[in-house]
Length: 216
Ligand code: PRT
Ligand code: MG
Image (cartoon, rainbow, N blue to C red; front, top):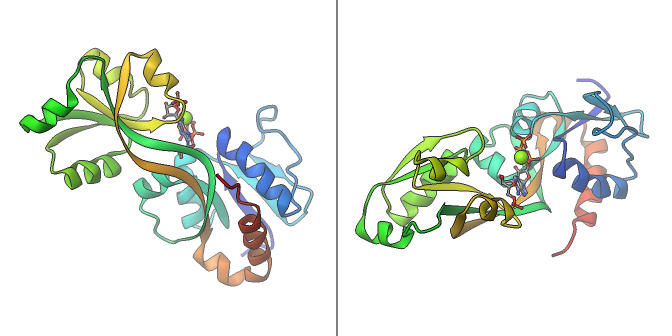
């Protein structure tokens, strides 16, 4: 195993909201991912680098040792399963909620009450399946990889399960949030073998992150 500590992050909100935590650990990323095409970003510490991967690939990179640690949403971690990952900290960043939403005018409560089979489109099939199983509601899940908002508008589905933060995306597409059911934030994930082999350098980093977690 190399002497380098590699941190996997996704571009956008996770990168932006992890920067203050890195700063608290004395780490400064030396390039802006929005301006550079590089996928490996150096830091002010010669033994620490950041790799940019898709948000859904962070657990895979860390689980297989392509990175020593990373930051991933609870949604992504549940869908991935979390094998090989030590999850020491809820970082309380990139917060949002998982919700059921329907087309304006669709009576979700009535559909649930009547026990009709509801067609639900989502990228989050594991989370959605569990949610409706807990409610005892029969659903037909339709797996999508994006633009979930379109599904109820085109008649592909009655409902969607998606992340909501401001609610603007739903509103712009004439959808209504009918059932928020899971609070989501991002967690620090660490490769279990790396934690043993690089413990003396990873532990201070984890401790600095812990001390800098934003409060509500
Ligand atoms: O966008 P891309 O396809 O590249 O990847 P990604 O969507 O997996 O990454 P990214 O950076 O968008 O999300 C990374 C993580 O941020 C997710 O795994 C969540 O844990 C967290 N997060 C926090 C969010 C949101 N807030 C969020 N609002 N992830 C996605 N959204 C999307 C949501 O899916 C919907 O399309 O934003 C839209 C809703 O936002 P509002 O503000 O209009 O309600
Ligand atoms: Mg996104």
